[in-house]
Each structure stands twice: as C-alpha cells, then as structure tokens.
Length: 281
Ligand code: C2E
Ligand code: MG
Ligand code: MG
Ligand code: MG
Image 1 (cartoon, rainbow, N blue to C red):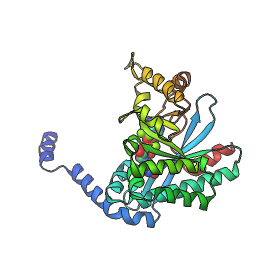
Image 2 (image 1 turned 30 degrees about the vertical axis):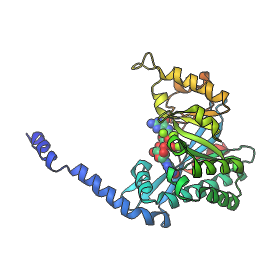
Image 3 (image 1 turned 60 degrees about the vertical axis):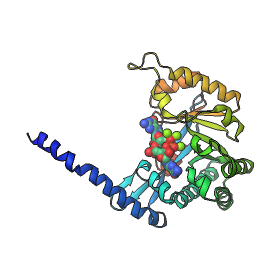
Image 4 (image 1 turned 180 degrees about the horizontal axis):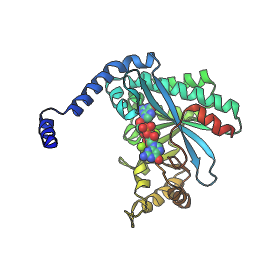
C-alpha cells in the first residue's frame, strides 16, 4: 500500500515538481552572473555531406557547467535566458567563442572550409545589435564571414519587417550564411523564406523520425521531405536533415537528394578537441 499512499500524497505535494520549480528559480537567479563567471561551454556536432561523407561543418551547442547542478542541457536554461534577457550576453559569448574556435580550425586546416553554425535566439535579433556584434567578432577573430552560419527559427524571421529584415540583409551583405532551424515545425512558408536572404534549411528532426520503420510502414514524411528538398533546391537553398540516427535514414536522405545530415549516426555533440582530432585524422 506504500505506492497508493505515495500517490495520494503526491497530489498534495509533489516533491519532484517542487524540486523542479526550485531548481528553475535557482537557475534563473544565477544565470545573469554565469556568463561573467565563464560557466558555459560549447560542444560541436558534425554536419556531414550525404553524398561524400565529408565533414562540412559543425553546429555549436551551448551547455552550462553549473557549480551545483552539474552540466545542464540548453532546454534547461535557454528559455529562462530569453525571458530575463541574459540570452543577449550569452548569445554574444557563444558567437565569439564559436568564431574563435572556427578560426583556429581554419588556420590549422585552410583547405577544409569548415563552417561553424551558431544558434541565434529571437531576442538577439530584436533586442541587441546583432549585426554590429557579428561584424566586430569577425573582425577580432579574423574568421572569413562565409565560414559562419547563423541558425534562426521560422518564428524569428516570419513577418520580419523592420529590424529583423534589415539585420538579415546586413548579415547577408557581410557574407554570413543564414539557415532556418527546425524547418517544418512552424509556418513553413517556403515562398516567404525564398524572398529572404536565407541560404539553407535545417529540416526538423521530427521528419526523419517519421521515416519508414516497423511502426510506420507507410510514412507521409518521406514524401514531404522529398518534395521539400526539391522545392528548396529550385529556390537555391541547401538542405540539412537533423536527428539522423541510423545508416538507413542517412541513405534514404542521400537518395532523396538532401545535402547534409546531422545526428547521432555520425556523432553526438562533442568537445572542440574531438573535432580537431576528426580534422587531423
Ligand atoms: P537545435 O538547434 O535544433 O539543435 C539540435 C539538437 O538536436 C541538439 O540538442 C542536439 O544535441 C540534438 N541532436 C543532434 N543529433 C540528434 C539525434 O540524432 N537524435 C536526437 N534525438 N537529437 C539529436 P541540444 O544540444 O540539447 O540543443 C537543444 C536546442 O537548444 C537547440 O536545438 C537550440 O534550439 C538550443 N540551443 C543550443 N545551443 C544554443 C545557443 O547557443 N543559443 C541558442 N539561442 N539556442 C541554443
Ligand atoms: Mg540549431
Ligand atoms: Mg535544429
Ligand atoms: Mg531541433
């Protein structure tokens, strides 16, 4: 009866939920100083050309090495950082650190043209001087602009009149690439995207996860991806598939004509040193 008793008490006081709330509050309190204290680190995940298997780029993914809670994934703190505005200094640090690292790789392997892809939050486009920050960071690090890609979500660019649109055009003129992240989860207005200075789509992981399998013998997702890739190519956009976890998925994507893939099939996000090893191998 211990279980039933436990259950009854849980409706009154859920220790797990309470702990989660307290953790959230503690994280929110310590977020602001965390950038200054240097508690964030970047992992990098390979983006691989599906036809040749070559490493084409890496996506920088932030983690928080919290002094009390240990290593935290971005879903634990990015939302909080957007709410309280600390995403602006955090995002600036991510950009600077990724560009510094990418420049190191470029100098060690000038023939590789490895692109570093950096996630940019909506608020960085609206509330900060993103264009000036990017220009200053490229100047200070010496990274060629074509080796930097910024990932924005559809919601960050949809209906983007005014400031975001100006920012996109200014970044494009600088030579920085723009990719639409998690494509397919929002409005997915390709006609609209094609009018923006966007050069790549990153198909949301849910598409690949819906590919044919024992559970989904007749998936619509594969047909949709095929049509999306064809349309994107006609509009001059390249396509990356996220969350590729198996050789079979990678092969299907290659046959469909998708350009690059990213996912556990090749590598989980890893420390910069592991990417350096890959480049030297
Ligand atoms: P995202 O930009 O769509 O990044 C891809 C996420 O998918 C990463 O999660 C990555 O670890 C995960 N992933 C990669 N391959 C696979 C796979 O094969 N299977 C599965 N199931 N997952 C895979 P992560 O690192 O936890 O990041 C989550 C999200 O947090 C990112 O989604 C991005 O929206 C956000 N994020 C990460 N770093 C930053 C950052 O520096 N700035 C901002 N604004 N957001 C960030
Ligand atoms: Mg991303
Ligand atoms: Mg994504
Ligand atoms: Mg995603």
